[in-house]
Structures are given as C-alpha cells and as structure tokens.
Length: 85
Image (cartoon, rainbow, N blue to C red):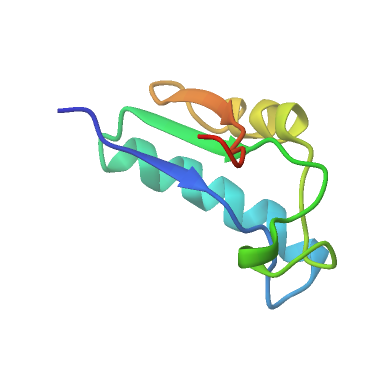
C-alpha cells in the first residue's frame, strides 16, 4: 500500500511568512515517515468548503518546486479537484 499526503490549506497563524517553514516541515516529515507521495491543490482560489477565496492559496508548480528542494524520495504532484471527480 502506498500512502501520501494531499495539502489543501495554506493559511498559517503567523501569516504569509509562516507558510514556507510549515511547508518545508511537511516535506521533511513526509520523507521521515516514509510516505510515497505529497501533492498540493491546483486552484486559483481556495475552495469554498476550505474557507473560500479570501483564504491563502499557492500556485501549484511553484509550491512543488519549493517542496522538491526539501525532499528527495517523496513523489510530488498537483491535484485538481473538480465538481465531477
């Protein structure tokens, strides 16, 4: 069985400056736990059930580049949820 993590929220109590350290910690913890994959959402705005358009949302491929610099064994990907999936 392959287990991974899908990151859906990017808000942080420390504001925008707290996002990078937390994402880096997620990448490192994913590797330490032996997870197979780590993915992020590919949306322009945060989905309504996760807080709505006013909540933080990062661009997927820039975020994956950041995560790639902090991981080496976890497979990285973006995932877009649509109303039909």
